[in-house]
Length: 220
Image (cartoon, rainbow, N blue to C red; front, top):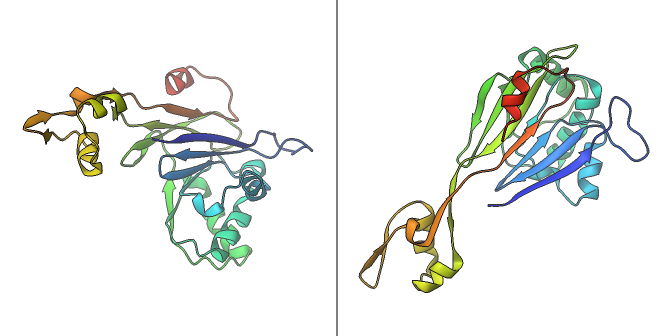
């Protein structure tokens, strides 16, 4: 399981020479998740040698310019790059029409699927290996924060795999799926060569005054 967090920008409403508008890219196993999309984010991605086509999800917290001004550029680039995946965008319900107008007003020739998902409190996305949750925050406009939590998974110990002479990729795949295998007449489960690893949790909270529910939302 591969997780990587890349900070693309941490500035507030005005970027500085050394700090870009808000944006964080998370490589979460096979999926790329972009948290907010401020001005110049696609250039920040390029500097970090990340293609925009690696993005599967864009999570928008709220419709202030410093969090969304990079969207037209991302859309334009993806339209020119033969992006062949579905782009999932989580966004407050109140801003769905704003999002559609960006595409219309900039005359972006969208040639890929966009799946617009309404931000809400609680579970928003349930993928094979992770989930995305939201919480409504307290800002001057409708705003949400998010956390991404990896589902618990089976972690295999290489030394124990060698001990039982388990090298076949298909057998290892079955163990990772929790299935029992047989080696030299002996039945082996994942418990013999590994354990359940607790998934990590990444919480993104921005542009809000403090309130108690944020503690439980970020816990862990």
